[in-house]
Image (tube, rainbow, N blue to C red; front, side, top):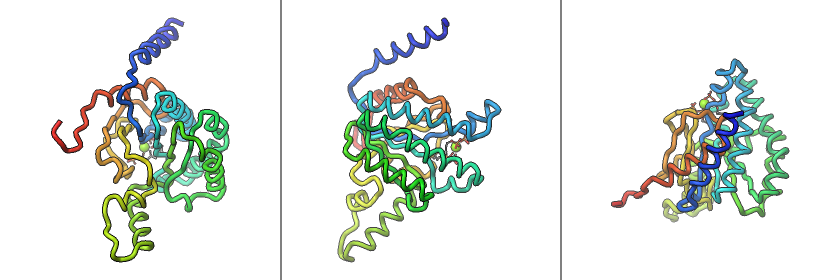
Length: 249
Ligand code: IPE
Ligand code: IPE
Ligand code: MG
């Protein structure tokens, strides 16, 4: 009872202190630690993925409330196929289920959802759900959520260069602007804040091109435990950073 009251109080003070200035436009998250969360409770790894879906819901809601315009979530990497096939098919099923169940709330909160990566290699049923969710939410502008699926930063750059190679006349100059336009994230500003949970200090092939000047925030919190207050803390830490982009501060 007392701890319940204390946690409400703590949450309120955190939000009361929250400054609306210098809010990141784009937050990207490497959602890690589902397996460790489950293992710590003597549960199978998939239990961590299930609770992790709750954290996704919470992150989407919190970003919409804070006025963040873009949220990019790393859900399945091009390397995650190396996991046992039972875990991979559980994750594909969970995603298929998640997409269907979330559409009403996404629409209600005016959230646009997109799925970026080598989508054509995913199970057909999942691809159909993806197309449906994208078209149902395409006119929403409050928050743009990108779920990166079968995504690799290197694969994305390779796909962009192949697209340039196939479409452009040989005289066209390749420059940063052209590459940016051919990435899956074309039209989306680069992330301002990159969060990784579960205390891993690596990028794991995420948004290699786009994170050139993103601010990193690593937390020990495991993804299934990551809730509103953790995201607020990350944004508050971001608000204290001095970004220089190579110039003198
Ligand atoms: C992140 O949690 C989810 C995916 C990569 C799909 P992990 O499953 O990587 O959890 P850990 O790192 O083993 O704890
Ligand atoms: C990165 O997490 C991929 C996703 C969060 C989808 P991993 O757990 O796959 O990364 P590594 O293997 O620890 O680098
Ligand atoms: Mg991991």
